[in-house]
Length: 284
Ligand code: OGA
Ligand code: MN
Image (cartoon, rainbow, N blue to C red; front, side, top):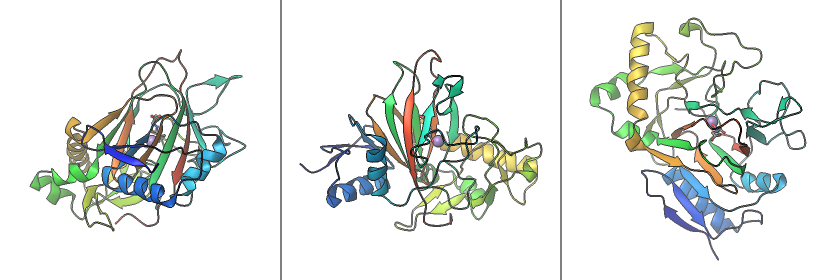
């Protein structure tokens, strides 16, 4: 049976059924998943049971992998498979087994503080809490297209700095200092508006809000522009919500969506294994 794709009842997102990702997929299925990822930006595949090597093999069908970002403990969470990151609140023998804890993760795209950010991330849910810990995605093509003309003009041709110092749970990364003046934020600079090479469509490219700065502007003007763009881009009309079940595999278009996560009960367990696909080009 070949993969079947159906759009979620949301402005973005598609569900793929009829696949077993633990087995090598026919190229036609990989192509179908990639097409859905390109156009619907988030792909949900339920009820999978993937070992780490199987998750890696599936992920590699979409390109070369990027290693996890620096984690606060200075060594990989998954020592046997360091390309796999672990997102978890579970603490074993006094040590977290993964990143991001149990708190909210604010709206962001992954690792945009790099010159070439990963183009996709894949998250496989191994254990999920009975409630909370939902993940939301916002479509940055739709957000761009719906921008008021004045904001479109204000963003056009502008470049912003994407802060490397804190992760999406707000934790200071090893080796970074607190940012006290956004003009000194350390991280890659990218245009606020990017153009998808394949389709020519424009998207907002915001990365993350804390310590953001639009170069060449006064701090006040930069704050006002970023606040206006972020408020616009994260409106519910551009978003979908994913409620996790164990076994879910979710793949998102990191250059075209923002995502955030709700907090959840610290007494419950949430364990995700994660890969990311290397980007092929500078943001332009
Ligand atoms: C991530 C992330 C969200 C979540 O893996 O990049 O932001 O739902 N995770 O845990
Ligand atoms: Mn993330």
